[in-house]
Amino acid sequence: QVQLQESGPGLVKPSQTLSLTCTVSGGSISSGSYYWSWIRQPAGKGLEWIGRIYTSGSTNYNPSLKSRVTISVDTSKNQFSLKLSSVTAADTAVYYCARVADDYGDYYFDYWGQGTLVTVSS
Amino acid sequence: SSELTQDPAVSVALGQTVRITCQGDSLRSYYASWYQQKPGQAPVLVIYGKNNRPSGIPDRFSGSSSGNTASLTITGAQAEDEADYYCNSRDSSGNLWVFGGGTKLTVL
Image 1 (cartoon, rainbow over the protein chains, first blue to last red):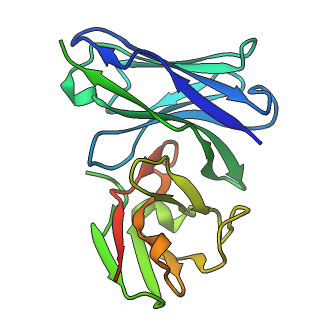
Image 2 (image 1 turned 180 degrees about the vertical axis):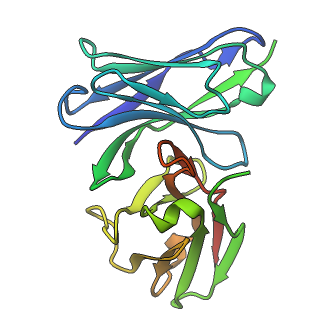
Image 3 (image 1 turned 90 degrees about the vertical axis):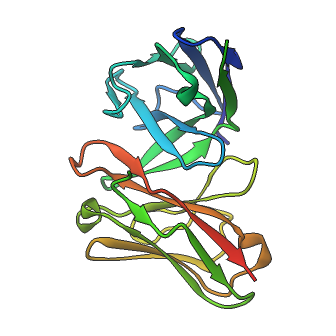
């Protein structure tokens, strides 16, 4: 059973960089044809897809966040990470990591982390 | 605004059938996946592909698609089905992903 766990600071100051790590257990991050993705959810609002990384290391980002986002993978640690720069209060949200599988070209998020709340405040 | 549009709220009487819809141009070419989210919990996949349920998801959940609309149907809604439901599929470019705005389901 694959499990994902987010970790990182729960409080980030405005203009600084938010950094989170997702640790994958129960399977190798580099095996199989999966994407690994980040999603966020401000309090009381809907889900927002942030971006994804493939096992090869190729990345794609939400255009609304692209200029500030970097997703990377460390296969030796079975982890992938999120960096979001120049944060503001609008970036305060619960951040989830997830595994994304493929069903003949239709993708779905089959395993999720429990989520971690990141607050942007001075 | 999202490229996938959902009704903000839907209600259903206990034991009745409810359909939750998701509209978007990309749905003419790709299937949606559906997620159930209860307060304070991470989303859970309930439907993917043409109409596939992950292990452990009751068979009262089903999916369908027609034109630019994907639907999640709950046949015989139970009290525990009360939750927020989100659809996900590709964006209008076909290369990236997007979530619908979510539908809050109330079971009366």
